[in-house]
Image (cartoon, rainbow over all chains, first blue to last red; front, top):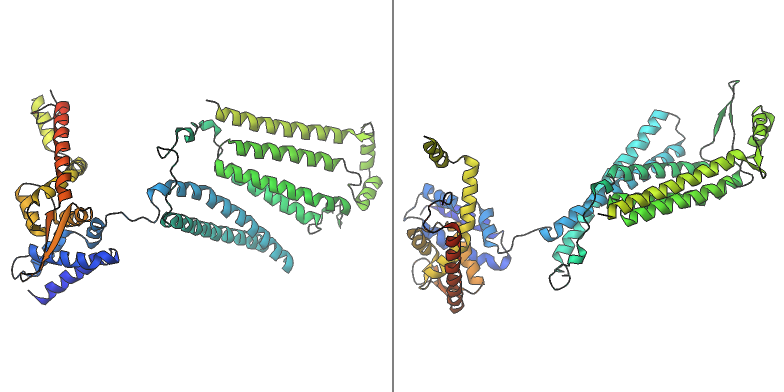
Length: 343
Length: 132
């Protein structure tokens, strides 16, 4: 036999064996080599060797046949859960970190006191998007690693009951009307966090409220008193946390589950309570803005508004609207959830 | 004329359906290969000799299926093996084990039952299952 033929066979046998577990390699090599030589005629030429090797198929596919158990990074038993986890972890992490990125970009811009608005906006956007994308990739990698560890730690999924599963665990058939689109959760999360951050910046005096006079002079006025703004901060934080919980609930479940319903109802009722408490505070307006109002023609309009038990009717109407809004929001959430759970 | 047209349509199987047919045949044969291998190894044989024996019996089996199958059956203790180093080239001879013989007996019984059931369902002696 020619040397090149022998070389080809050795390379083939090696390529198959290197894909197998260490303990099987030597034996498979020895046997496969013997089988190949058996399949060759005496004094076989190059062509005959190639023919036999092609008959045996690619080393990868032959090695696959030799392995008794197929190899997986994540086996079918876990793959379903893996995909389901990625579906809510990636958008959630991506969006939250993107918002944090926006905030970081805004603070960076504020620190350098940049005045070029388009430049600041593009800086903030690129910071947010790049942080969001890299966080989503991080989340992908770590979720995958988590599942691979679960797969290979030898810890098999605990079997439930005597049959390995239980009829009681079957999910309810879902009403397609009960679905919440992913975009809804993300949009609500983005908007509420954005406004919360703006509110916090405003309360800490980073965003002055601007007033323009008819004369063309630009004057900065603090509309609200500082004591009022300081009181507002914890309320904004509470509202933001509730909004984040609601957003997570919607992104995770994507239907009117009990979790989503509780989150929505809690958020709308607590927001309502906060709003009612806040608008009925005394000394909301700063003294400078109060003086400005008293001295302007607007004050006459204000005096014309009737009062009820010493409370401005405008505020009463506003409170009623807030209560109606919160109650209708809660009722809608409960109705959607009930409809989703009733066949 | 109608019959002729239908007959021709069956003869010329389009490509994707040909693949489906191949997959179905492979699936159908997979389990029976174990029977053929266990049955042929009542006396010791090495890989390539067994391949030729089986192909001589019109068993449709490829080398790249048989060699891994032999190792798998050995790891399941249905076969025993022995390296013969007396000749110029060493060869691995396989023989069916006691356990393998017992398993083969049970599998053959099941094979017979299955064949009877399938024939009862699909109709004995029919070449194609299309008309009765």
